[in-house]
Image (tube, rainbow, N blue to C red; front, side, top):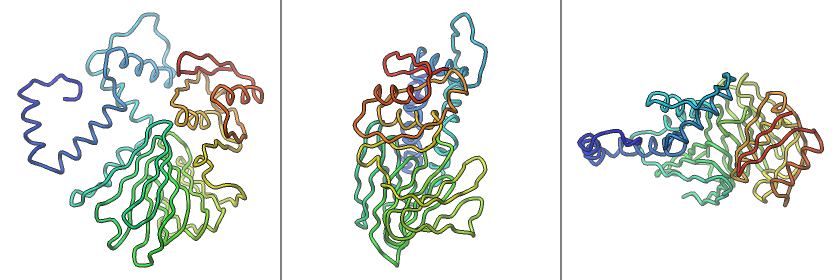
Length: 312
């Protein structure tokens, strides 16, 4: 359907079925969103995805161009989705078919402020998705997040507020905090500005971690281990257009740059990915940031449009 390979009769039958089934239509729209954002639309883009996947998996470069057959295009698309982690599928799976959902989303370089039905406000960082039930606020307040958001929660002891990600849940009554859970980042984080929150992880669901103001919890996806640090600094500086990182790998830093500046980074070797930097940027352009990083740790940078290729 999405690739345009079905017959007119097949397309008509599918549309008729979707018109008569609301739940299936919602699922169809989400699958369509996945296809539009993560799968190849043309042969050239499909070849690009295949080449990037081959580079990532360290396949040997081929001297001639590869013509992608139908199954190869779908395999390449699947690998791209898998490279984002399983968050997207977890995310869709949390949709209760008996409830209606409202979806909020942002693109690269976009920050959006949202007011929820209970008066709570959410500032959604770039390339993020937030799901909220239509019946939100009646008995409980559950949202599902993929990406990053800052929450200012209206206090209501009768209805706890929970932010659910793939690996942990942050539960509060009324407070201000930030949660970051991007699929391609190795760490999920939660930072508390004011109030008190409890964090429940998949590894230890019966042992909540309690944060106090200025605490930051870091959950390693690979190990499931969680650590808490107290930081006397601005929570969620991205709300003011700032980029801040402390002893982060260059691979993680480029993820932030991609979301903020709508660009793409490709690493030639793992050694470059693991270079570590500390920095705080406010009004600098992308090229200025890269120049400053390069002065701290020398690396080679090749630019082509919005694509940057990095190597030692």
